[in-house]
Length: 301
Image 1 (spheres, rainbow, N blue to C red):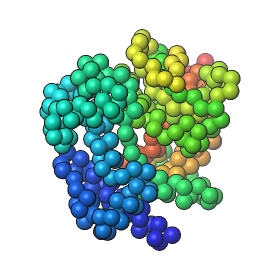
Image 2: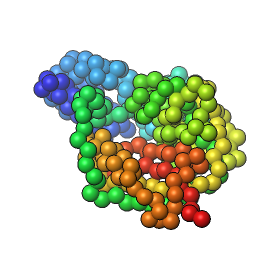
Image 3: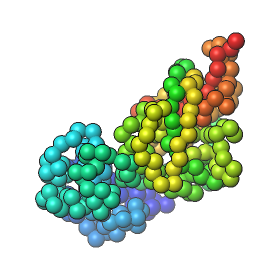
């Protein structure tokens, strides 16, 4: 176990170094220096734990950042190429087209959803699997912020599973790269969400849990292959937000909120649960803001 942790921390240091230097030249010797091991060992353990060599990872991350810049800022192609350390306009165009199936020029003018590369921290990933076979102790969150928000009429672009009940079973069934695609939808009203669908929004043979992103009610853009669009009526959502947490404690943060939600009485706010009005949803757990989950409610008559 100690040896595993040493490898995980070495790869985490390389991930952190890449993130800080994504717009600068990165060498294997630089990665090696920050990881604290030989170049050969660093390259081998990086691929072992993340499934790709370091420079394939770096290129994919640079192309994703380039795609977001093209989508949101409309810069010159050559400026983006130079920003992300490509030698030439032509080389960048070839790499971008191979990665996303569309030229950077076409993508800049009319960006369709594409699979962005959104890598997870190897430390966080490992901690989940380390804890997966252990029974978690539950406790009440010390501070939970509760508010009611309005959601307008909108659509939800989503990909259903077959049997998934939560995020991790969904990832095992469908894959963990869905978030990258959802983050690329320019018309998104909010950030991507994991949803627990009520029975009236499920179709036969599909899972309760899915992932998606909400877009305007008049959305007429491209729907990625394997996805579908459903209509969502205006509704109110009761949002539960826990306190900030350290990244390695994300599972405890989720458990805390679930314990609060089990016994929370919405009548305190003059509402009742309305689970058929909309999907219950969760945001990606980010330590700096606390875990956030929302459940639909309706005003008491």
